[in-house]
Image (cartoon, rainbow, N blue to C red; front, side):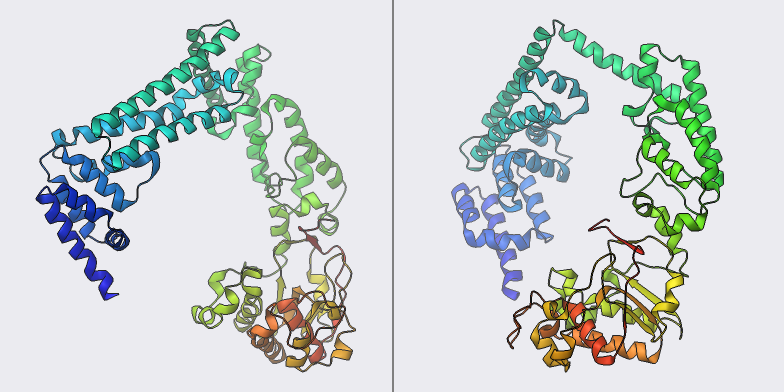
Length: 551
């Protein structure tokens, strides 16, 4: 490490001396040295890097700017068509006082940015649309232009870096490319105009009209109490306004009614995402919302229309939801909700309120020392470290709870369909640990097929007995805090930190003929529960919704 930190300062000293004495060939030979380039990666992060730039900027000879930019590109690893702009911008930023000396750099930046302007600037969007007639789609057109841009800029910057072309030649190359792009766009626009028997002025006039209509709609919405950014352009009622099917006054009245209705529903605890529904159907929607609101008044669910799964978007789904909810009590809704309702975040929050508290476990819950000690396991991509976090997080949470409190662990990508509280007594009837022998709405799986032979031997579990019974499902656990529970989860965590038990490494003992694959923390949990004599419970059908296999 000492060698790396000492060498860059020596390299800097040599380069600065060479630059100051105008020994061009020696400078370039030195910069091309592989040893220098290798060590310069460290220099770029050091304050000496800025010292070198300032020294280069102090050169009085404008011809030396090419060398300065070349050095920057060499050491700063600026590649491709952005070379000229990046180098010049750095020089300009660090030495604003010497405007005369920086003029060539500013010109180079301006030439390069012109290309970006032609392709990216929003004011140029209408010309891009006009090119549809020639290229079929805006994406194909952009791809074609960028391909030309990359080739032209790369040739210019490569020649510049190698010293083959000076500043004037690079400028000419960029200028010719700029003119070529303009010509390309002009041809496309002309082709569009000819085919549509219009004029170029007509194209720009159409763009102007669009902006004017946008301003008109913006003022119209503001009168109705809305902002333009609140309503996507694609669902605004300006089309009706354009066609004369609805006058300005009626639109303002409809928007005002819509805002008033939304505020009324918010007061009832219901927020509609009506901005994603077409305001062209505003009157029908107002009537429909009026019918739905009383049904939602008694339900402890908020914001039905903000489903993260996107299952309740649109008016048709909402109508179906209203029909389903009619005549049902809140308990019936929570006990027998359709899948679309179960997948809403609001429904889940409603069910989670049946728990005294709920939290989401993350990597931040793992102690750094624990991560270091078990880095060989936690570094595995599968299961975020072969699911070792699961017993750790469960034990950590249990230790923070009061004696007799109940902890429920549930895997990700499972959503509650109903309230779990009524099931707690059944799960913990015979023990303070409740485990399920099957996944939600699925059958059980054999221990023989999903646990490797070494696990039985290392954990001291009788193979003949355990292999003929179902394997526990490790995605859902119910635990009442007690000394027995703490000991059990601690043992589970200890066994899981054994790489031989939790990993997919081949078993030293031959596996039986029916073996398929090892199930990591779940296999360890299953064998440990059988060794401790814990009873497995049949998982209640319809309690959880598996987003991997919705049923």
